[in-house]
Length: 253
Length: 253
DNA sequence: CCGGTTGTTCGGAAATAGCGAACTCGACAG
DNA sequence: CTGTCGAGTTCGCTATTTCCGAACAACCGG
Image (cartoon, rainbow over all chains, first blue to last red):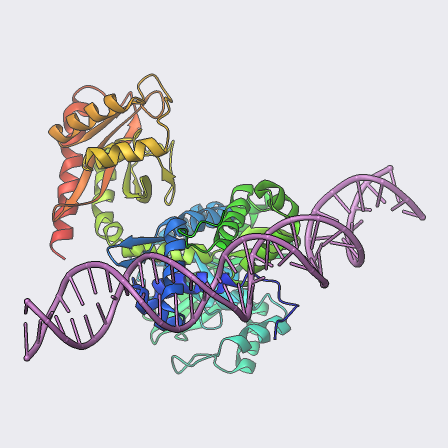
């Protein structure tokens, strides 16, 4: 049945499928790609050749690898989100002050993308990497973002990507999550109490400019340093302080 | 005349063309893209929609922007070049020691791609950015790479991307360049004496592992700090030292 | 209310994507 | 040396798809 509605470029499915397959297989040959996507070897070959010609893949003997062209587009995209640049000094100051690791997160298609980080003296990096795409519901910076989205959108996002319980504390139930987001809104900052990994905590805050949600920041570290007053008072204060500083820098551009 | 040889996916030209156009225009609408690529508006629209569906573009009202999906693939590609990770400590040490800016470059399709950098105290960054793709013939790190490629390949690369004279000193003539590469091989390090910008100098060294050229590093800065013994002796020594350190770390993995 | 924009929809002719079968090339075993 | 396997690659053919052009819709400022 030819669907007259769908006017997208069909070959893109295969094209990006092939790119993704090569990426996931961390380098692959024609047959690997063909069988993974369930397409003819010749088709896979055509697409691989095409991607090489466009420099998105590199052919190394008879295996294909993801090239650096993506980095080129990717980094530019990142830069265009001026936020990363504007926020950097504040992130670094926050990292210095707390000694922990600090992340800058933005939302895209219901997922979180880390676009900048800063490491303090004692920083531990259990998670994430710049460019990584992660769920929003189980990390402090993600919840800071969700808390500022309409409930309808939150449900939508949670529907399309299962909430799964990594630890005792993970908010894998939509109602628990919504309650936590409500509390987050009231407090003005979000908390992660071992919801991602046992023994890991974090404090996050949203970045809002002109009523528009730009992203969020969070400081994370091991539970033994994230407890008592430091976790409940000091860190929330410096994190929201840094968030405000970033919002101000965005405003005065 | 349908060329029966060329078995690439044709729609990819338009697809990636559209992506590139949006990137270059730094956000664009249907008409902008169509007129830049000289294709029908409707075609541009189909491709834009496709790219949005695949999350490579973001639709913001009626303008399209490059999404962060590329960053995702790009960063992974970068990481797979283990080099970046292994080299980082040495780059940072080199930046500290010299106070200048240090780059890690790899070659891809005859162009150079910066994949890591480290800034010293006095670092000036006149050029480049991680992910940027640049010609090889007019920078120290690029010449360090060219010096280790066979002459045939060097000529090939230079043929397909005009050598142009940015300054008095740019080696825009293939024979001058080849002579400089010969000298570089003998010295073991490359020099840039204001060939990119007036008043800017740099010292570079290749990274070789198992007889295979992995990339190169370079330290660059203003002429007033890159002169006399420092330029001719000290810097070459620390740069080649750092290069050796990186080669050793690669070897002991 | 109306030209001048720009984004979007859609029919249909021309181009091509993708399959499958055939071919090439090495590696390996007997 | 020969045969078999599995890899990558080539190529003819046809059902699909792309891409254009023209029409339509939505917006804006005057």
